[in-house]
Length: 378
Image 1 (cartoon, rainbow, N blue to C red):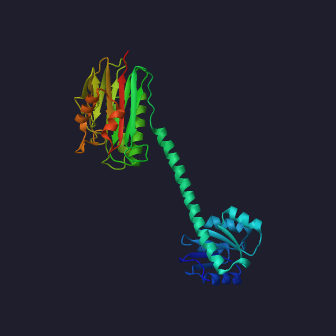
Image 2 (tube, helix red, strand yellow):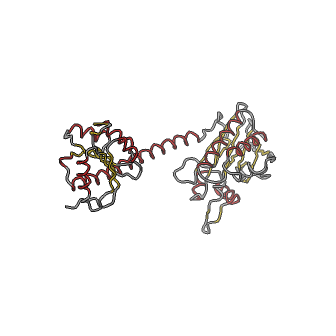
Image 3 (cartoon, rainbow, N blue to C red):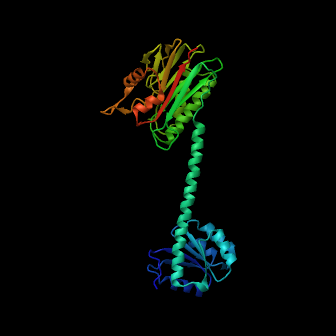
């Protein structure tokens, strides 16, 4: 009966006995599509002949330069991509089990093999190997995903706040599905003098390089704040870091920074080529006027950024955000929300509610980072 190898395979036969090698070749010639066979007599010859084109290896366990499981383990190490069948004259159940446990796809005794059995064993071994490799790739992908998720979660900031007088909420939504990090970044730090420092930034572009750059800028911002550097010197340092770390000279970063005074009644802001914050003061809703303070980072080497002093009063809320929120398409005509539309939404709701705003804009076309901070009533 014709054997069931229906595709032309490339096999490596490791056999030092001429008669046994001839027998194997004759059996496989009966296959529907006889395989291409390379015959070697030792492991030394195997190293010279084995390459990625070999799909299946038939190996004897009695070779001139290795015997038993040692020979098998050497072949498995040399051919991790190929299916490996033991074809031996040793009829020993324990050795067969040990061979399969060591990684062989099957164990055949020469005296029991005919054309049909050999062809079927090779076909099944190939399928087992494919399944094994697929399982290994799946496990590796799952481990990588878990490690990446742990890494990304660890890089997302936890606000450093030690006051109960402020309500603080953040939302971080990458535009790329399945990712935790994007080029947008945010952070909040309260320094020992009681001042509260907030930043929201946006690295132009999408992808892991932009995400890594956003993380670097966020960590640098926090470090500089904790070191007492909060003005133009900080922005110049961030600009220098951006230029050193970016992959292309056209990459730039916009950001908005706010420093709220210890009495929580005023703020100093810098809007660095970024959308203006939305403020609610004594019930009045407006976008911050007087900006931007200057160009984005990474554009002009000698850039300067003006300070915008903002009186807050006793009762106030503010929202710093990236352009993913205002570039969402809303309404019947899918028009961009824009700053004016965002302010109108806040006025309609009577307050800043991040979740409600995000639900209203629906599907985001870009990454989104937003920080909401509000002075609690006494």
